[in-house]
Each structure stands twice: as structure tokens, then as C-alpha cells.
Image 1 (tube, rainbow, N blue to C red):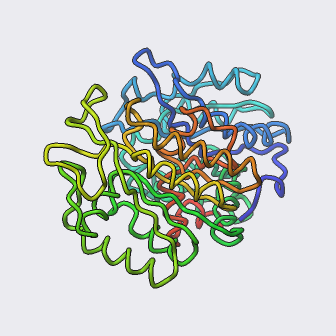
Image 2 (image 1 turned 60 degrees about the vertical axis):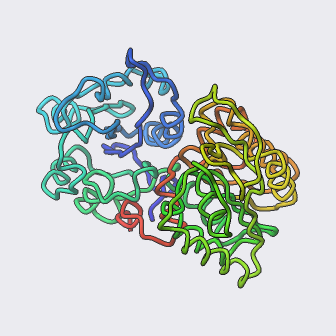
Length: 396
């Protein structure tokens, strides 16, 4: 893969796929600009070389055609501030205005075009649509790791319209791959993976892959209750994938066979309804009363998890330990984040695997105290599962 440092952009028109899928409030104001800031280094490298940049991104999930709430025009002011220069807006990616403004760009100038997903051809990976997008520049840069697992027109297919030497991976894309490789190929031991979230079905492949690599595998979140049932427990109204109980049993056996310390919660904070103001108490994970549901790790499990994490030298975390969006059920996730921060301070390497875990780490104030927070939950998991990422493969 060609990297930004190996390419001189002087006089070049770079068409750059970024991931500016940022959250907006009802007034279309950005509520978290992390994804914008993560791409800045790549954009500035091109501009400082004497090149110009056409930025392409998606935002949300439009139904097809223009929708104001999904328009990237809302980002123009923030981007102008970020790059210290006026960012032009060119509207419709296939419109005449976009083509004219792209062609007229001078060195050091930036043009933002509207949501690529206003065209259904984007997600379909349409070759003709991709070829039209490619005409907006003479070098292709992909810095959108969060969508690298999608074979969409702007994330993978349009690269084919450029010579191999004019397809370049941005700094963010490069750092995401480097950090994933560090965990997969250069992990210092003990290596601990923490898997949370709602469903085993979302994490089967990554769990199986990790059983060949880790010393400790900690399972929390909703998926832990399927494991509890696999061990003969009763979980009340807790989240349960009944059709995955046999699979959970197999994973427990695989961990034993491979000598992996599979740590499952022994107790839960349970509630009589799915609400922050619910009545709560602590119960053993294998004996949750009917009508009650586990929504977070219990105190015993929180301590056991934290103790293992603090003794680790490499840590991978993907998925919250409970319903952390509700303050009364965020303690498990918070204690795990704190333990990871402590281990990192003591010299461990920690990779937070995107999605909800990344949001939780930031929200709980530990963002600066871990080694790396991935911007691509799904893309990172697929990379770690050993799957090909079309957006990376297309760069050669």
C-alpha cells in the first residue's frame, strides 16, 4: 500500500474518501467531531505539499436522494476552522458545480462534496458511478477505515480508475492497520481480550480467532447470559440467544482445550425493568429470578475483571459490560475502562475496538489514558477475524 509519506502531492488534485459520519443534533450542530479531527493530519499533508483536496464522505443512512439532515453542508464551518482556510462546498457529487469547482481548485484549497449515499449506486458499488467520482481528481486517497470493510463505490471501486501508484492510504487508515497488527502479531503477554455487547452471534468469529492468541478472555454484556445458560444457569428475563447456547458451550470447551482463562461474570446487577429508574439488586449470574434481568456486572465480577486487566501487558476491548447509556448500569463498563487505563499507565498496550466501547471510553473520561481508540468497530473486527477489507485491498 502506498502511504502519504511516500507520495508528493505538489500540483495534484487528490480526491479523498474520509469518514465524516459524525453525530448531529436536531439543529444540525456536530456533537462529536472526533472523526473530523482524525482525518486532519492526512488532509494537511496533501495541502502542505502543494496539492488540493476534494473530500468525499457519507453521513447517516439516507433513504435515497437529498435529505437536508444528512447533508455534509452542515460540516463546512467546522472544517474551515479545522484546516485554517475556507472550505468550499460543491453540492451533489455528480453535479456540474462539483465538477467545475474540483477542476478549478488551486494548491492548498479544499472542496467538500455532499453525501455520497444520496446515490444508491454508492452502496451498490456501481462501477459507472465510481468512475464518475474518480474524474474529480488525479490521485485517490482513502482514509476512511470505518468503511473499509464495505465494497462501496467511493471506498473501494473507484480506486480501480487510478494507476496503482496513484492509490494512497491515509495516515488514519495506516495507523488502524498498524495498531491491529500490533495486537494480532506482536502482543506482549499476558494478552487479555475483553468482549462485551449484546450478542454472541456478532462476535463468534473474533472470539474463535482470539482463542488462538490470548491468555485471558473476559466476556461481559448481554452475551454473558447465553454463556450462563450454557453452564446450566437460570437468567430470568436477561438477554438470551437461545439458539446460541450450544455454541457458547463449544466456546467454553475450546477455551479449556487451548488453555485460555475464560472469565465469565459470577454476579450481575439486576433490574425489574429495562430503565434507569428500575428497582435493582445483585444476584448470582446463574440464578437470576424470573421477571428480573441482568443489566451490568455485579461487584464481584467487576473486581475479578479489573484484577486480570491490571496484570495484562496487551489488552483488546470491544463492547460494553452493561447498559452503560443508563448511568445506573455503567459501573461495570467504567471499572473495566479504569482498569485498562491503569494497566496502560503501568506499561501495557491497549486497543479499544471502536463502536460502543470507543464511545464509552471517551464518555467516561479515559480517552487520553489508553494506547489507541479505533474509529472502525466493524472494520476492525473483520480485519481481526482475518477477512479481507475491500477498501484496503483496492489500494494494492
